[in-house]
Image (tube, rainbow, N blue to C red; front, top):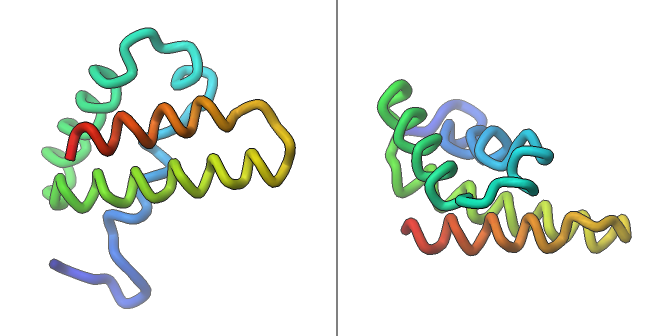
Length: 89
């Protein structure tokens, strides 16, 4: 596992994986979309696929918490994304 000076590189991909929100919230086959994104990113960056998935899962859970805190309607979308990331592990 390679770390940058300030943290894991794979962490930064989590936001990219779950955005743009409009695409994630309306996609009818989220597992296929996210798996394809993950494959492309892993191939281009040579980052560890499992770490990408784990950080994407954690960030989706955190985003769900933010939606709860804000009282916004995105909780279900982020929980769904987290479930998809978990299923790909």
